[in-house]
Image (cartoon, rainbow, N blue to C red; front, side, top):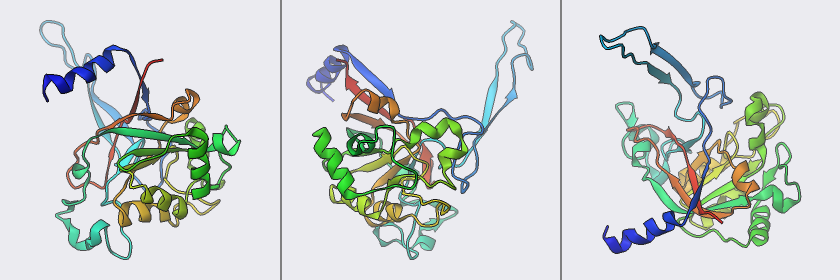
Length: 276
């Protein structure tokens, strides 16, 4: 980059920016899909276990977790349909040595692009959130765009607020096994795909409409986005603060861990806006 390309970026930062953290803290016992290994954190060495001659000491950590726990991004290797991954790859043949070399998390490029928040409950007149098990339709997304006046474009990352994120700290209610969870269904996923977005995110444990008692029995939005159109999915996002601030358009920043051959990666997405 030359000075002429860097200077506008530096000037924009100098004028004052506000950063919204859209990621969830990783904590032992946080709600997660039962399909994935839980997050665990421990200290194999604590201060005082070993003290150096000058009095110094250090602590260190070990963590274990599934790659689809907490706020995370799904790689295209995550879901197959009729034995095929995105691009028609045979799911069995694509697996080499226990890793997905072609569509793994290491192939997800860092995202620094326009972001759009679609605050669906605000458009529906239920600002606290959508009802459990409610399917967000294409008509709902169109109504949200009309209300906000911000149209998603090709290459954008579009975040869907259902309001369900307010249950995250409650644990089991956020998972919604019995109640169901609101979210985009197949029709809404095709609406996003038609706009050729780069990624789609939501404040729910799965980017899906989960019906009461059904759990993750079927995942049509995952099929449309990951398998049919190659659009990444970001789940378990924290969108309440961004929505409360009335921010619908922003610079979106996300860099997944380059976990070679993995089906997903923990992530800490950010929304950056100019202050004032």
